[in-house]
Length: 169
Image 1 (cartoon, helix red, strand yellow):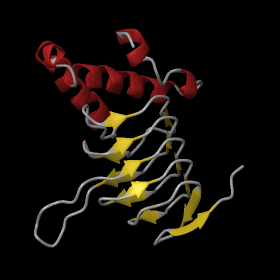
Image 2: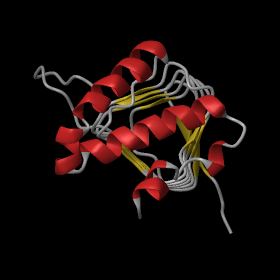
Image 3: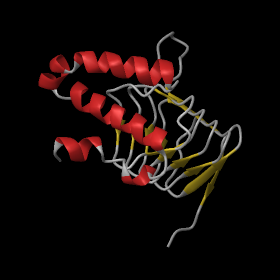
């Protein structure tokens, strides 16, 4: 994948969503710089610019070294918080006011962050925390709190998250 394919890989799925497109192009550029040693040193001023613009002005925390698959759809681009250890699969959707990250354990340290499978649709005001795996083709409803593993083809609603497995053909 060349530089421009990498930078614009989310462009098509965010059609009509200029803010989402802008944030993801900025993220992919920062991600490109941060994951390639030569570009990290050359692009370091850009990484600082990215952090100030996206975190301070757009109020979105997507660390530049987060692993996110192709075709991420970002709705409303507000109050989204991810840790740099989160792994998000391809063709996923994230909505506003969502937190995906680790949690503090009893020893004072932190757990690992969630791994989100492909084709997962995450509603607004969702909290996914801890060392968990969210399977592929999962729907997570608005306001859900997810702290346990979720199998593929499931729907999660409520606080705590109630899981219902869907039948797929």
